[in-house]
Length: 342
Ligand code: PBG
Picture: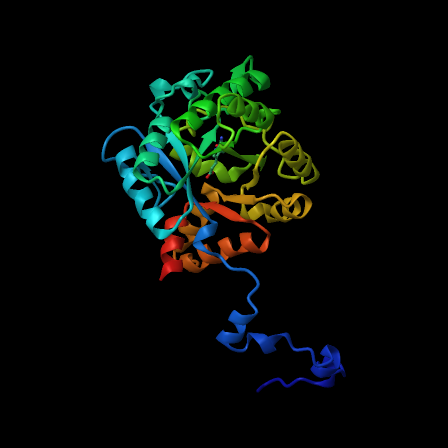
């Protein structure tokens, strides 16, 4: 050794400073690490978001999301069957509809036979044991990619809510188990709840995207549902400012007062503080969405050999559990379920 410690390092020994408390003691063996592990990820924690497209036997790769595909309903049925066999409790569907079907008001949400509703009916019939969550928002259906009716440069709140609520009733009629309103319009939870109840869907639950932040991490998703090229401007007038957490608390409280059954935080990993905040404040079933950009970052780094993708996947999902999440929407769901099984 060219260098040896000298008294310049200080006079107190490790035992003196720790008082013999040694946290490494329980980390020394695999069995003791297992014994004191506080949080666990199980297949019961997973919700799998899938992308739908019209046609038959279509399995279209999404460039920015390696390993994720836009699937026609027949292919989706087979994949969802596989997910159910792996024990995944629920899926969330997102449609990529033909551009010719999109309009200024997103009126396609009012078609009982739109891609979302056809998929729900078909999947429900083929795989009745899996829960189906439908996205109640206009963005897949508008010609401008915004989550609302756009008039004179403004996203019109109340009109959007009325239309989304009517669309949500159609989703419930098609067999959706959980309606997930994702547009951050004011009053949407209460109006959707009352529309569901008035139409005999008291048992259909609501998972509100209670805190959806204005985020760069949605980029690959917008490519997946084909809104990337359409969207003009940003969503700052309806999504929450990424700098705010008190506002996230107020948003969530409002959704609870209006009758949501569950709440969700989106994006996920950069917002774990919000997950913890909501879980501690409200003790409701609390979910987090590991969004497209988070998925893509892990996949891209792994593809370059910069990180161990599988470890990063498992670690990121465990982090959600540690933060207090009851479940995670993640594009990794089937891969994780496979890994947990093996
Ligand atoms: C909008 C919506 C978004 C996502 C799902 N629904 C955000 C957006 O496009 O603004 C993002 C999901 C993801 O990034 O994985 N209703």
